[in-house]
Structures are given as C-alpha cells and as structure tokens.
Image 1 (spheres, rainbow, N blue to C red):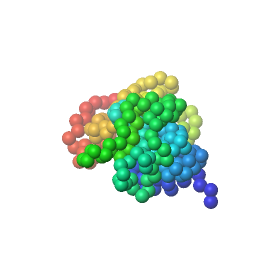
Image 2: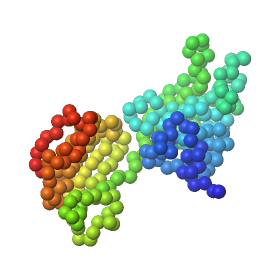
Image 3: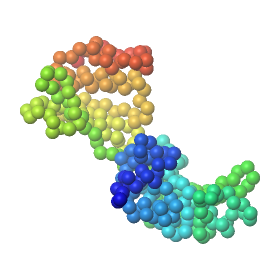
Image 4: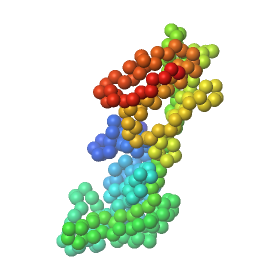
Length: 272
C-alpha cells in the first residue's frame, strides 16, 4: 500500500510527545506535511519526521555533511525569543575518554564540529546564527550537544477561515462555512477570521456586501471565558440586526452563559 504524505507522517510521529489529535503541533498550525523526499532523508539519518517546516532543509543538509542533529525548534512566535535552535551531537573524538552520554538510539556525528562550516550551511538556508554553545562536561553542568541559536522564524499564517450568516426559510438565524448551500437571492453576511502575521492575534470582521460592519482583534492565546462569551454575544447582536431577524437579548445571553465558568461574567445587556 502506498501511503500519502499525511499517513506516512502520522505513522512516524505516533509516539511524538508533541502529537495532538493525530498530528503534531506544527501541522495543526497549517504547515505542509514534509515531502516524501524529506521523509526519506529523515529516515536515512534517524531523524523524526516532525522537524519544523522552516528547518527541514538545513537539518537534512547538516546530516548529509555528517553533523547528526538531535533536536530543533524554529521558535514559531515572538514569545519564544530564545527558543529557536538546532542541537547537534558531538563526534566520538570530541567526547571525554570513557564517557558515553548518548542513548543507544542516538548516533555521534561522523566528524568533529566545524562551527564556521555549520554557520555557512545555515546561511545557505537564510538563517543567521546569533549564538553558539559548545558541549560542556564539567561535573554538575553537563551539556551534551553543540547548540546553534538564531532569530525566531514565524509560522506562515494559515488561510483565513470563513463563516456565512443568513436568514433561514423559517426566519431564524443560520450559518454555514459552505457558501454554495445558501439559497439564491438570500442575503448573507460573511465573517472572516484571520491569524495575523505576528501569530499573536486573530482579526475578526463581518462583511455586508463588501463593507465591514464589525471587526475585532483578539489574542490567539487563551482568551478568557468571559471575553469569549461577550464576543460571541456581540456577534449575535450584529448579525441579527444586519439581517433583520428578530432578536431576544435575554434569551441569547442565557444561551451563551450556561455553565459555571460564565456565572460571574458581566454581560452588557443592550438591544442591537
């Protein structure tokens, strides 16, 4: 059986600590699965398939040159200021006599680390090394790997998501993410939400016939429950009014504030 890229990726990363719902974190953010060529190279050099997208090329070339990589992270967002790195295993000759700190699954680099050559390899892939930390075997402060740091590389934002609001045949509010199912000649509103380039915020906007009638910028990280429910109610008020659908503010507030986490939320009760 020939596996698709997705099937092959998931099979290889099934034991990854980063795996969530069948994929790893970087794939959930909208990144492409590695190509079959990239996965072939990862397999050849004993590298897990879940290398961050921006580092796949440089990790493959480092291993081709004899520098066995151990771990890496592109940083993903500006909150991870000091977490963009690639770690490289030392060569057998570089380690203290009689010391064997690598696990059986890990392989020593096949040649001594040449810092200038490694920096040049990174530069070929558009990455500038800003800090290099060599291994240290001082008792109590053992660092096993050569670590190369560089500025955070942001994830490419996924494509915008769309939701369409319209008046159903029964006169109530309806929504869909498939515009084609909306009956012809039916007025609809388009809601767009986009992960901004800083990977820190979502930008929401509701569009009526090409005109933005509502917009809001919210954090992409753990929006407080009360802020979530207030935003949801605000959207309900806007779309009901724009589509001319009868709206019961008390009923909507009750519907959106069921549950313990919303009991203390302060909802401004205003008519749309």
